[in-house]
Length: 141
Image 1 (cartoon, rainbow, N blue to C red):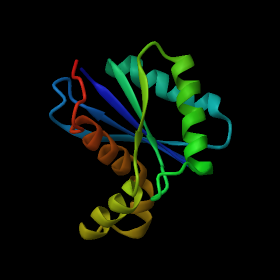
Image 2: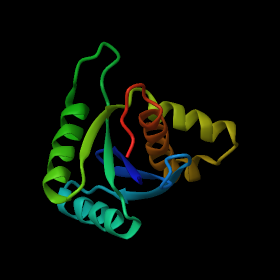
Image 3: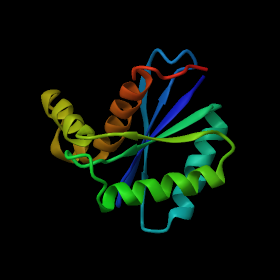
């Protein structure tokens, strides 16, 4: 079963994809977000069709106290719009601190600042996906 993770952001949307056996996770791409959800939804729908995705998980940026702020609300609304647009299940998953962790990973690998900006969202999506796939009680396939 191939799973696609989405790291939704106001400026960029990062994507990561699992292999069919859900063993490996790979950063996929970054989609510019210019405020109109339609092109982003279309791009993700194309990836789902081209890659044979069976399930989508959208990162939900929950605050450290467990509350949902404006970013979490925007991600939830985007996930609902995506669920209406595609024929595969779409879930939200807590993604606290994944962007910060992705940034640390890239810094640790001496990735230059300009290149980090291009990569951080898809690396964050990969971290969301890895956490989701390893979550206790998750049903596979």
